[in-house]
Amino acid sequence: MKQVNFQELNVEFAINEFKNMDFRADIGNAIHRQAVNVPMAELARKIYYSDGPVEIEDKDYETMMTIIEHSFSLIVPAAVKRSTSEVEPVKDEEDGKC
Image (cartoon, rainbow, N blue to C red):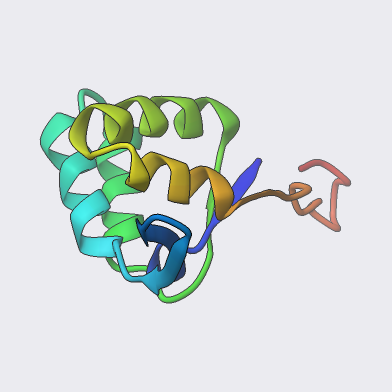
C-alpha cells in the first residue's frame, strides 16, 4: 500500500527550485474524468476531498500514475513519485487480518 499527500506535493517548478503545491483538485479531477470503474472514481473523490495523506492500494496506485502521466507534464508525476511512501496495511484487531 502507498501513501501520498496531494496537498503538499514537492514540485520542481523551475530547474532545481522546489515548492510544496496543492494538487488535490487537479489530480482528483483528472482521475475522475478518466475513471472506468468505481474504485477509480472513489479514489478521485478521496484525493479531491483529502486533508492530508491518502492511502492507495498498489494496483490503484499504478492505474492512477498512468492517468497522471498522460494528464500532466513530466513535473507532476515526478512530484507524486517523490511524495509517495510505502505503508503497512492496518490489521483488524478482532481477526488479525489486514
